[in-house]
Image 1 (cartoon, rainbow, N blue to C red):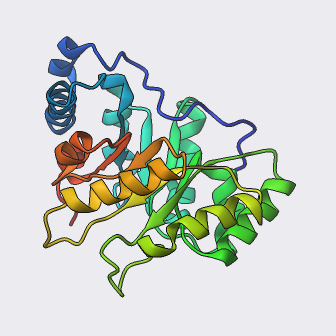
Image 2: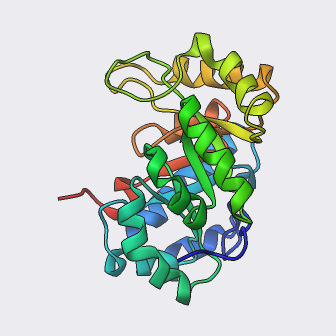
Length: 242
């Protein structure tokens, strides 16, 4: 299903500052909302400066609908095919959903991704840039784009090495004509995340990028302290996946 317009990234149905509403939220979401608000207060940041992405990968519509009903409108998925199977029907009922692709994107899935998603967090190679530029020319849609960094330079992970980030961002802009909104990173699981978040923020700043997609269920509070504008939280909201 192709969507005719780009919905505003990060717009929730309820006020982000209405903390009194958390008592009506599903328990996991309520706890996360309170933790995000607390982290923002501790960092002396406006709660509205952080978009909470509810990562619904592997969960079906039955699990997602209560979170939508509680007011959450920004969701993240890892795979194009899984998102295509469940979100078009949900979005026919809830037309203000903002859907983010937070997992790797194969170049041959670019057409479908551009049609379905409002943001793509995994721009990480020239062939994908070329495919995205082609689809941007043929579709009347411009999803928000994040360059994915491999901050730990882990061989099993996708992403651009920090030393190559500046040249890659310049290439995205100058060679492919892509507007890059920000950076995304996933720190090594066994390391303290703060240095990797700090590195991502530093690279973003020197490239004039204002959005930082960093922080998941275990470390989103640290990410907010380090300047995250988007945090990707799944298990803390939905529970552990089977």
